[in-house]
Image (cartoon, rainbow, N blue to C red; front, top):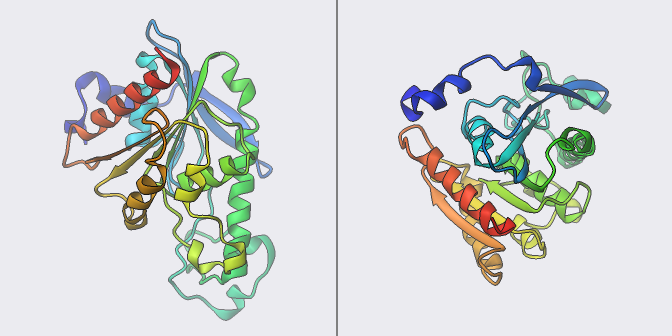
Length: 275
């Protein structure tokens, strides 16, 4: 991975997090770390909230972690939220007595235990649990962002981006000045009973008045790639300031991919805030 970054970029990504960057919020009754980095250049445009996929950490070693550092000299403080936990892969089997357990135990599977196979009602319960956790986290960000007045950019990855899209469409979290989605998808939505299914991401995006940058990686989740055409088809009716879609190579075999993503985000954000 070191070959992907310049010397100045590689050091912070592999260094311990400074204690001054660690802030804390409470989510679902538990303390969670939020990582905050201030502006480091002459420009002070505002703050970018970064939230990774549900199976990642606030201190991501991937593109989310790269952006956490690289946005600072471009005029953006960064606030990295812990992603919603509890996402399972419902394609394994477990003992019937484990499947039949009710309540919170369904959502808290031990790391060394078989992963249960969930039905529609359980998937819906977990989805609501994750969305409630995200809402609770976002509603605690106002004090953390007060030190960084200006515009608000929200950058969300993968399955978390799919959740964020719904929360924004329902106005359950603060509306940012611009939204960056990277490989957005919803993996198990089709397994939930139809009356409880959310509208497709493409349909939710088209009715939003937020400027949206839609980035797809060639190594992204198959559902994100599959739905990319539909998202563009629905949203191409908008002016370019309000919707752009780019296909980039963001894996480690393409060293310039992360930097190219950074350039796309910087250019789009400047066009939105007029700077």
